[in-house]
Amino acid sequence: MELFEAIVAGISDFMWTYVLSALLLFTGVLYTYRLKFFQLRLFPHILKKTIGQVFKKNRHTGTITPFQAFTSALASTAGATNIVGVPIAIALGGPGALFWMWLVALIGMATKYGEILLGLKYRQKNDKGIWVGGPQYYIKKALGWDKVATLFAFFLMIELIPSTMVQSNSISTQLEGTFGFSQSMTGIILAVLIGIMVFGGIKRISKITDKLVPFMVITYLLFGFIIIGVHIDELPHVFALIFTHAFTPISAAGGFAGAGIAQALRWGMARGLYSNEAGVGTAPIAHAAAQTDHPSKQAFWGVFSVFVDTIIICTVSGLVVLVTGAWQEVGPEQASIMISVAYGSVFGETFGSAFIAIFLIFFVITTIGILIFYGEKQAEYLFNPKAAQGMRIVYLIAIYIGAIGGLQFVWQLVDLMLAIVVILNIIPMIFLSREVKSLTDDYMYRIYNGNGGAPKITLFSDKD
Image (cartoon, rainbow, N blue to C red):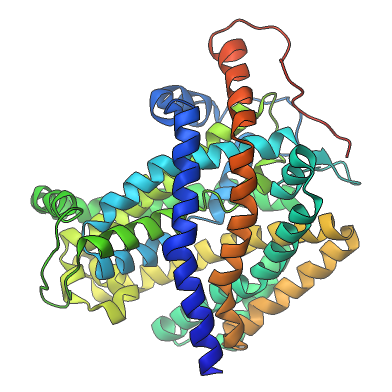
């Protein structure tokens, strides 16, 4: 078993360090070039059309509101990776990792925009009249690659089983260590709560996420800003460290073992790519249900989600551990508790641990809820709606098994299977980059520039 785990870990590390990073960066640069750096040029317009219209009534075609689709998708990215993953990147790559995380996020905005836009163009209604979409639909409809679409749906459906286990285990171990809660009881409670959530479908999930996710994000950021404010005098030095050591090695100091340029690049890029899921193909599944009259309008939420997830949340997590000095106090082997140490330095050790534990609970509940929805849609695409309900039960069982630490050898497959999913999505996206440009040009001509008229290309279809 140890040999199996070592082989899987080695393959996964190679795939994510070289193959996936290269593919995702290439695609992001390609889309950024084809769209003429629109994520930077049009950012004020994107803010106006997203967060600026949250309270505007929407009567367009779709199942849930644009904001509900956004918070549902954000629920799967904003969570443990932002709170725990960023300190790990700093522990292994140094402060310079933050710079590369920002750069990858700016590029990833274009990728996420493109996949959501494609997901909306090729979405369709299911038997219940709910709009569904995702990579499997645009791979099949736009390129005619039926087998690739099937493989994408299958691998994503299976990958979400161990992914769910890992998420539930992160909470059960945190609660056991902080409050002494039984892992078994935590698993049961999580399964019940999330079951209530997912049995209502995307409508119930979105009604929960559009209230819970903004509250969690704003509260987490508020406490983070307080910590940064207490150490405001450290900010100039911290930013100097970030920009300097993105290009030069940094020596060991305290519990920090030191890092070279390659490590800063590797861990910063990995965290940037992994945290916002740009190119993974999951976001289009949630956004496909949104009410909108043009794919670009909803795809703008993808740009905004990367901004919130990586540029804001991940940055605050990074700055908190840097300004408090927690990154030098805690060694790489305990990097996952670095953020608790940072919060504890200002609010007290007990509060710091409890605060992070509680927030991880809420983040993980919403994350698992939307992950199960993603998995159900793959089963529905591959088989039928009854199969989707069956997979829902499988995922709920996986929550309990993961919480008690069972089948840990399966967890090793998470990164490897996710790598396969990314490849099956990102290669078709490269072939569809011209179509993304055409759709964007249509939006720019008719809506942004106000020329009006009928769309130059078919936008939606409710037929196979």
